[in-house]
Length: 150
Image 1 (cartoon, rainbow, N blue to C red):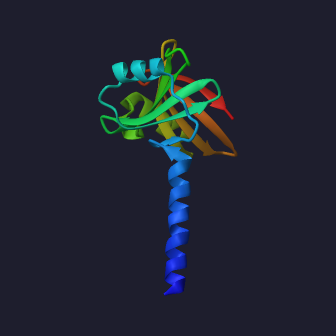
Image 2: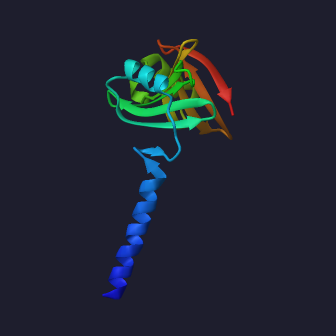
């Protein structure tokens, strides 16, 4: 009985510590500028499962919209910088899928997505094989843009 009580007290302490480490799903001490929150809600009012983090001087909202996982980046003044969207390869334009298959058919597809920014919009595929890692980029019509070796 004493060991049960000790266990319950220990679990209560752990749970309390975890609850204090985060407030409203955000890291303790995290402060999101209201203008960032307002601009995000204006643009992504129908977002689900929103969580925020700060990366350097940028604020990043991770969320789900229309079944796609997304990360939207903002300055501390609420200026939208870009949105990275997880897009499965099957949703890429056919021309991009064909090019990828014909050119890198034996390579492993690691991650796929769409980059949306004011100055650039493109589909991207991270692949590995042939002794290297590369990112392939395609425009909205699936036309090959460039390869970036890493």
